[in-house]
Length: 343
Ligand SMILES: [Zn+2]
Ligand SMILES: [Zn+2]
Image (cartoon, rainbow, N blue to C red):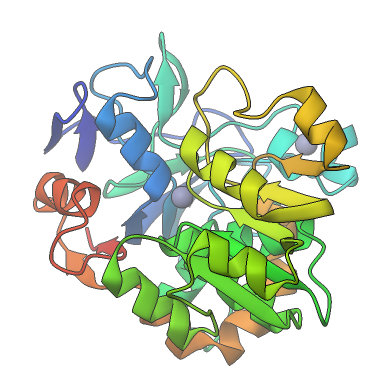
């Protein structure tokens, strides 16, 4: 099959690799109809995240048709279509039962193989999905595939961020970073009734998207603090994953407020001290989204906001064009917000 494979920073290739086969009775094989490039894939592309074996198929956002099922699979048959979250989960361990599927004791991240261990990704013609019964969501009927695809990561992660931030009607918040996840955090904050959602980014296209979703743009950090009677916002939704954005979040949040972090971070410390956090009575909530736990819950929202979700995709390309699309996305060129891949 063809797959987009990793060969080092900035070196992705579309090449032929062996077809995946069933390895466990709980596996299925999915023929990928639609995949996407994620902002977190760029950490690998840039070389900020290292350790991936050369030749690993990339990607963790995909949906498609099931073409083979292991003997123990009960919920899926060949011919059914399903959407995957970015990691597998067993549905039955301590964490899964508590809704924290992101920390499933048997979970694996798609698109990460290190020293031979791990799971090849979904930017490929075929992908093996372990623990299929508890990992996959049957494709919701009547939902556009591009909207359904976002249930598996970007919409779930944005919504998770707004949930961690404790957004309720009347909350004033700031979303830092208006890439796909940040834009979905704006949408989610609006859905949850936030009174004012400041949206911060440096890319004009992203800011105009944020405005369309209910964000207020153009305010400087000083103006935001001033507009909240000098206090700062109730909650910051951080969707970048850098020291600068955490620093900005710390500056914007009011005493007693919350910084909710879904950006993937690689720094060795927080850019504020325990003493500074103490002096702000700060709450920081951080971590990988338990996407599988949100997928059913967010399906009605995905139906209702189907058009807004589909509009997130600015580019639709083949697997062959994926390496160039990564570069375009990384360089934020050509109005690129999100890239769909069609194998
Ligand atoms: Zn993703
Ligand atoms: Zn589990």
